[in-house]
Length: 572
Ligand SMILES: Cc1cc2nc3c(=O)[nH]c(=O)nc-3n(C[C@H](O)[C@H](O)[C@H](O)COP(=O)(O)OP(=O)(O)OC[C@H]3O[C@@H](n4cnc5c(N)ncnc54)[C@H](O)[C@@H]3O)c2cc1C
Image (cartoon, rainbow, N blue to C red):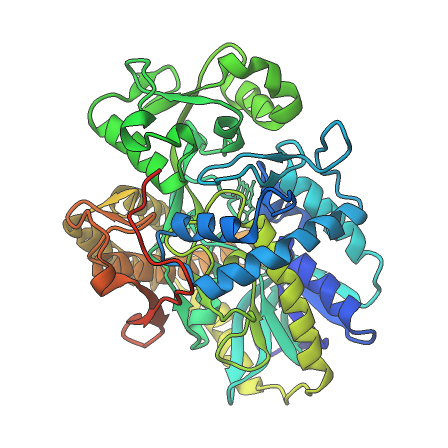
């Protein structure tokens, strides 16, 4: 296969990722520039991207009683003061227009009796500002964006193309290399500008609300190409992953009035967040649940041996059909529970990757013409902990910004000559080194060891010895990975090969998450160290910046941008 045939596809703007950020970027690229062409490359059919599963809502200041300052402050306090405040202030201002735009394009936002767009409460909000489409927000927004894309014959979809690397030469985007999953052919995508919108990385954990496709490919590809990543040690755990599958039970269930109860059948959040209770931000609720479980107050029942907490919605049964239909269905189908009558068994599950590509407030990376948006990027508005309902809006707002930026760049730049040698090296890595390797190790076993190790050692509550243990595990797993054998040698839909490449990405990311967590000797947002339980602004009010070296990740730190909110104690 190697060297036989290389297909070269050229477009003005290349987008890696067909989720909410990628689709929004594609639309704004073609709408802001009448001639530009877009190549949207996605390993999935776009409507299978993880964005489709977003449930509870998307925050926007729509009500005159609400304000940009309030939305900013909620976000910054939620981030445990690690968000860049200039980025947050910009973000909250550009979100509302996106809600109205998607409304005009046909998104069926849930509405009040008077016809205005309805908004609900969410964790850590001081005003109910989450707009929603029942509990299927992602599904409806994605349908809307995808339909809109169909209006433009300048948006070309390359669905089921698996990107393996990005080649950046002379500080300029040269190409993405990809496998056409349908044929097994190797492809180079060239463009004048490039947008990374490839989503998060949470599937390097076992118990997760993420689709199995969320393997951090975009982050790892950027890292290997020599660009910086930011704040990777901050992985969000959502309090209510359904036992045992990890499927998300939306935070909206608590925002609509649901209770969390321990095995003594008692609500316990008063101890941990006396005002906000179950509606405190996710990091705080997740920790509270783990502390209850560690104190022996977790349930072990017919839903499994893993100790868990009960999410009780029985007292809001009248709201389930209208406001929470999807999670009602999920509980019935997957656990044979009717939430109107019985509590739902839940436990914290990985849910969001706060870290990502180091981009500035304009979505720019350090390479001119290369941009990042959506969960793949860390602008950073989420800092150490994202508030629920603050991601889909980010995809829309900065997806719009990045599309305009990339189209503008493309209108005044050319596609460079293809770096064929570099493409050949990547082709050889895959078809010779990986596919023909006979070492005997297998992808499923390394992946399982990685994920269970991450769950155990780099979870909600972290300690030095466990983190060190996992750092060692990962080094061993990386050695085993060098001896991996892909059983399927064929070209057409070789999912085993794809999973092997994804595992390689996850091992790189797991290493930087674990080592980054080890080096951050404080507790902030989703990163909680049992051995350093306090936030340490003197030493760690800083972003972690991560660079690739042959010896492993290199870390340095950058000050957080503060505009008008000085770090303060975070009480809810
Ligand atoms: C269950 C769940 C519920 C959520 N609910 C909410 C909510 O109510 N409100 C909210 O604000 N946020 C919510 N979130 C978070 C939010 O949905 C996501 O952060 C956001 O949708 C991510 O969008 P994205 O476009 O960045 O990435 P994704 O939607 O994950 O898309 C990534 C894209 O990249 C492509 N890709 C990845 N790797 C490759 C590769 N190697 N080659 C080619 N293509 C590749 C994929 O094909 C895909 O198209 C939820 C998340 C989950 C998991």
